[in-house]
Amino acid sequence: MRAKETNLARRQLDSTLSQFAGLRGSAVPAKGWIRAIRDALGMTGEQLAARLKVNKQRISRIEQDERLGRVTVKTLKNVAEGLSCEFVYGFVPRKSLEQIVAGRARSVAARRMERSDQTMRLENQELSKEEKREAMEAMVKEIIEQMPRSLWDE
Image (spheres, rainbow, N blue to C red):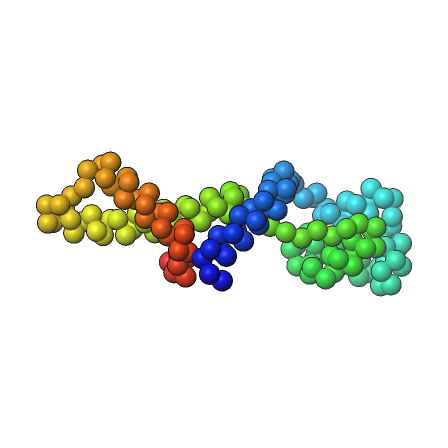
């Protein structure tokens, strides 16, 4: 994907993901979502098993796998259907994608500036603090606009 397309896609995705920001920090019930919802509906494991056309032991295993983080997305979709729920899957960024990219660009720019600053110091051509700040901001902006493939290389 070209840089302009990547930047546009990131802004659009940020807009979509912002709807989920309120979910950040939501605690998973101790017994897991499946068991919590099943209990709240007053549905037994046997009843859910019948709805999913599996045996009761399979429901116990699914609930255990959920608590241990081993349940598959496919299984969660099937169980949600059996519980008359909609399964929603997604990621909630800690910051906006724009902020994540800007932070990374700033880190890359700082490393680049450090190398050039050292060379310029040796040649008695060191920039003032204001010139350094302006150069840094210009470099960050350029990195974000160009979105080099190496941005996330360590």
